[in-house]
Length: 350
Image 1 (cartoon, rainbow, N blue to C red):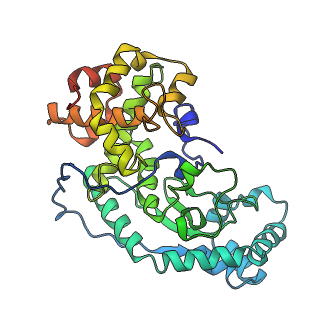
Image 2 (cartoon, one colour):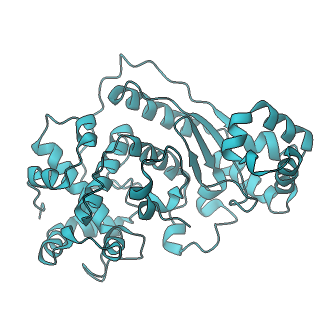
């Protein structure tokens, strides 16, 4: 597996790459003492109709080589991107590979699980529609991507991820998001990640990835603070496009974990100051505070994981309160972490 932020900073200049979104930016609903996000006036933004192309229904359910060949021929650009068509010496090999997936004994179970859990996806369509309208509000040149769904057997046949995203295409690997209702999970995935494999993760994780295009970053700044605030901006970008989600949307914490962060915010900040955590530069240190782990014992035995991401978001939110003239676009353009930190005048609430 690729952990998103381990390679993100080095690869942001690339127009396209793959990632495992369920590891990256997880979601869990929580309604605690949160401020309600103000929704801008969208009366001047045309409504958006989002329709999903259900690849799993077109290719796998018929269990037919003819239907597979027809789809590949009618969608050459998509087939090159998603199926890596050019890697096969002849289309017949790719067709046989997809047919092998369609007729695999486990695929029927995956398809039944995804049909049961996702149905016709009206809820996901509505969530994407609002998010894309808000993206158009903040970024008028935002290109609405085409959305596809698929089942790939967890990538076992040479193609398919949880999310495959380019500037114009989003492909959702449904089997990765079946949650507790699913029969199978990705192999070698820790339990603390498995509990976050839910349908509710799809739209926010997609938007978090899209935020990269707008999230300016100073590659010369090697400090953990720069990484924390990059995360904080990405979270806030997604929060603005999904205003009905709770403040825990991108943290993946249990209720107890988020409550702990809120209760001990001063303790978390104190450790970061006393141990000079903000200005650590090694990859090992960064992984301790923003990487995937069961917890962050450097702060406390029961401190939640990825605590640097949480703290980075708190600083960004405080920056916005202290500098209301800086809108979302201007915030995302900022890449001076020290300037953001200083102008936030961040202090724990407790």
